[in-house]
Image (cartoon, rainbow, N blue to C red; front, side, top):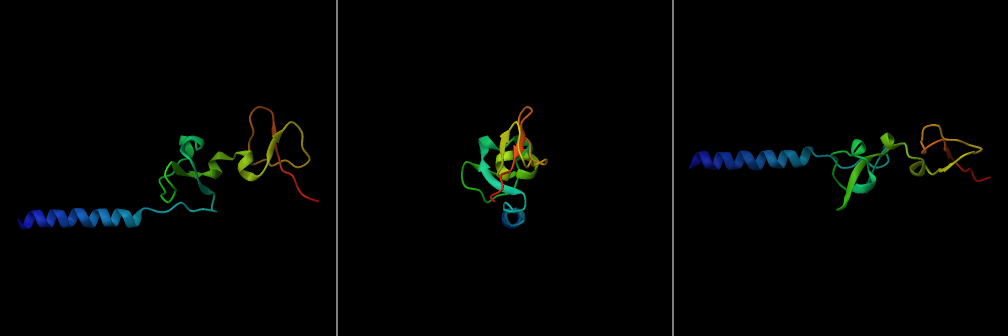
Amino acid sequence: MHLIHLLLGACFASNALAGCVRKRCPFGNGYGCMPIKKCPVRCMTTYSGCHHGAVCCNLRKMNACALVGGTCQAKCELENNRAWCRGRLKCCVHVNR
């Protein structure tokens, strides 16, 4: 009987510890919550803290133009070389003057 209580206590303690170790999505540090369908599998993380149907996504791995506030165009005045667009388009960043 004591062995059962010991095993149940150990199980509870390990689950509590696992919950403490799990980290929340570090917003603003290149991570953010996105719908599961919009975050590529290679960019998904195990961080928690996103609402149902969303996952913590490593936005730095995505380098998507729209995520940095740009638009994909053939020519532009100011190009963001760290973000990508499909085909031969460039990620154009617009600056208010």
